Length: 68
Image (cartoon, rainbow, N blue to C red; front, side, top):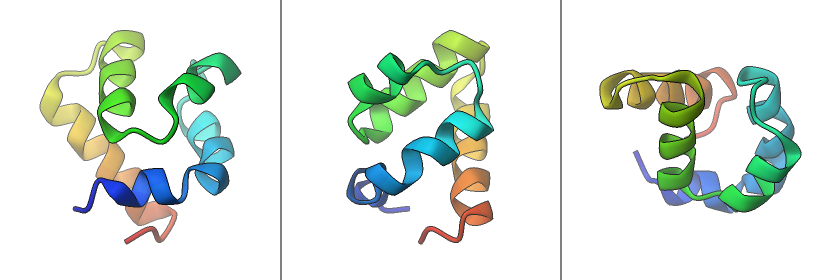
């Protein structure tokens, strides 16, 4: 997966990210700035997901939203 996909589509994805993971605040989304690594870290912190779960969650999200 190309991690730049998230950064390149961040403006369009922010709302969908918040719908998918409702614990994210607007401030969280602003600070992430479309960074794949920030999204990973915040999913681990806010949801307690392990690294494998984070990767699956993000890939499922991208597939669901037809982002490739």
